Length: 579
DNA sequence: GTAGGGTTAG
Image (tube, rainbow, N blue to C red; front, side):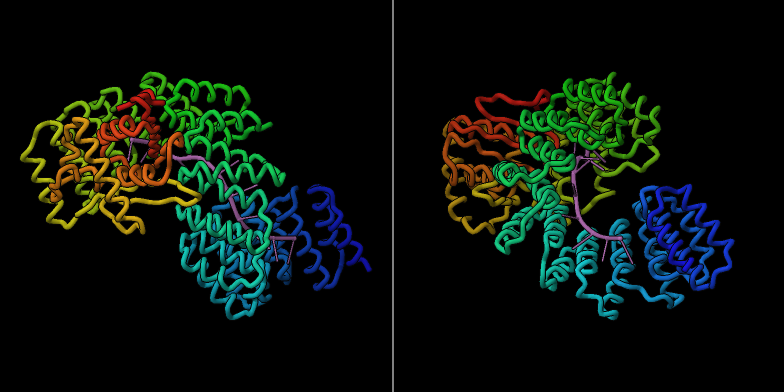
């Protein structure tokens, strides 16, 4: 049978050149239509999926196929998202298939379309596919199940993801990893760790992909102890560490304050790609090690790895934190020369760079040249810059824009009121406070966390829902007494945070950073350092109290926020642009 | 022929 012989040739085909010859051969032979359909579908599969693939040729052959079979449709759907993960073509193809009604979608089709929906977070389309899964009876297929789970996780609908996950009877390592990564992605770190533990008790063996998700959750939470434990687990169980896992480890150690360990792991990566380099550069930048970050960038260039837009975010923020204005400008130009179009994040770095160098006027002009409307982050950067440089008029403008753009974010009111306090505009300050009260914004959702015994405890300003709230409150009272006895005079920001709570020393109590530190003092003993992570940096000058607590209790306190580290041991700090 | 993973401005 000629049909079988050609089919066999396609399966064994070594490259695109030969497949084109076979393609021409099929078209010139007088074969029955069914045979032509069958063979052309096979060629579509080859072109769309093989490593020699050519999606455009696949599409051409698909169009020539009299009755493309489901294999052919599936190959094309998958082929399109393999060449471009943001492609919408797989969704169009699926719609076309549904409209035609023939051939019927199978489990492969559904899994591929769900993957395409996950890639572009096409929530409505994915939900329609879910409805079809329900009707089709393919709901018990494990590939379709993980496809659905991944789809909801990527769309950040964790409730629906959990629902799908609960319905999976036999959860394999892939289902567990998807669930863990879904939790980690939206910052539900304790849920991610919990799922990881549950996975082990279900006797499912984690692999390198699982580890990447768990390590990322650690990085997000600043959970160094768990991160170290996971790293030891990887080594003990000899889990292969590929570049993705190594990059996740570099990022985790850097974000948890262990830059030396991050460097060590980075050094051990044999062939580094742009993400590995970016992780290292960003890690050095957040530690205030600007020169090392720029050195790393030079080495990256020497290794002929093309920097990405993320690399430049690291480079520019390193320049900003290191006060390297002219270097920053130079990197900005070279980024554009490389054809990387600056995003609002890059502009944000430059605005920060100029503001930190007291070039606030230039920063304002720079904002006007942006092709984007300034977002709240840009206005906040400017406002903080104006506060430091006591620029009343420009600060006021930034503050107004901020409140107009984001009136429901209490952080903005606190920033503006602190700004007015710093320029001694007391009436304006109280006006902002009044406005905040009138608009019903009671607390700043400042948040700090501390990891103790494998659990991340989160504290939100003014929130006392923690099961040990009573003990924490008591510990804070003792701390407040001792701080007060040490002769500490409350600063403007302390008083601001104490509005409506005038009890002596209580200003220490409401702040999330204080809550986390008090919990650390309560639950751990020296010489273990108290490491806390702050998620919001409204009130930088609050560090003064932290420094005093560190001295009184003779405890090392390390505070990490989104952009830098502060160490409190007799006032020393790992960061150059301190205060 | 199928599913899960790493870097991102204040």
